[in-house]
Amino acid sequence: MSTEKDFVEFVVDQISGAGLIAHRKMFGEYAIYCNSKVVALVCDNRLYVKPTDGGRKYIGDIDEAPPYPGAKMYFLIEDKFEDQDWISSLVRITAEELPEPKPKKKKKKKNKKGKERR
Image (cartoon, rainbow, N blue to C red):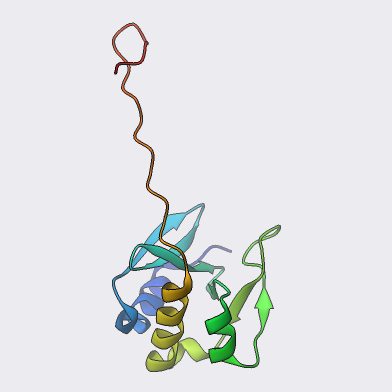
C-alpha cells in the first residue's frame, strides 16, 4: 500500500509551524523536508521521523520502526501528529540537529561528440 497524497498534505499542514516545509514523492512514498533537510518519511500512511538525541528526549516513550524493509530505525509517530504544536516542535528539534545537506555536484556538460566540456 502506498501513501495517499491527502495524508501527506495533512501531515505537512500539521508541521507547518516548524519552518519551511516541503515534500517530495520518492519511490511511491514521500520525504518531508524542513528548511531543506529531510526530517521525516511518510510510508504506507505512517509518519517516520529521523532519530535525533533531542527528538528522543522530547518524545520520551518512543516507538521505533523502519519505514521500509532494510531501512534504519526511525521514530514512528502514530497519533501524536494530530497535535499540531507537539509535532511541529518535534520536527523543529529534529531539523536543528540534522547536518546541512551536502551541495549537489554540478554535472559536466558533454559536447556533440560525447566528450566532456570544461
